[in-house]
Image (cartoon, rainbow, N blue to C red):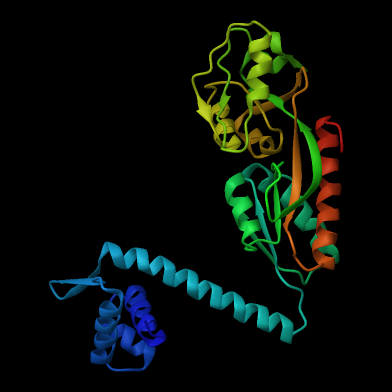
Length: 304
């Protein structure tokens, strides 16, 4: 494979025709066709089918294009890093965060941090626990914000918070009249079941329910807490669930109450092992910890 062949393929995929790709590359249309043909020989699979004068990428071409785009994204990031060095600008903070934290404490932390560090740029990706771990291990992220990891190679983690689950229900639900929800109050209720996510297991929640010897249903299983809150917003169930994602759902009639007995889970910030020290990253982590403590204090949860 040669770079010019890849460039021709990418041009055709993006523009849809060899003529437009030729204009982008400042070459002739036959030259683009020849480059594509040579690339197909090199790859040993067909990239395009021609139907009624139009090019249609093959399934193999679509898979190959995904790899090509990752390559170009990497090149764009190298260009950006070079510009930052030339202009003596701080590196972007590349953050991977779980959905619930991305809509609660993270925006508050970014806002507060930008007051004193306006030149720092952010790249924020919402991801699952396992995706965050992989991004950190492969140095594709500078910071992960999540519930606690087990000990994983290549990842350094430090505590962010201990957060107690809340009991969430629709505002029209009879339980919404209570200030505190106790486990026995869930008798005969439909309680969301939080599905395990490989290395993260939420068994503590249902262990408490099962240990109380109460009758309850649990016929809706979810992994994302925002999915859970959406079910609660439709009054399909109540949930003993993490507190961070509740805020955006208040406008949809969701109410969260303290739950007893207390069920706490640990949350952490994590960085790749071997990451060079960064004053801006350290300052942001301090800001995040402060904002998270204030957020949980407002909910009545214990701070770390």
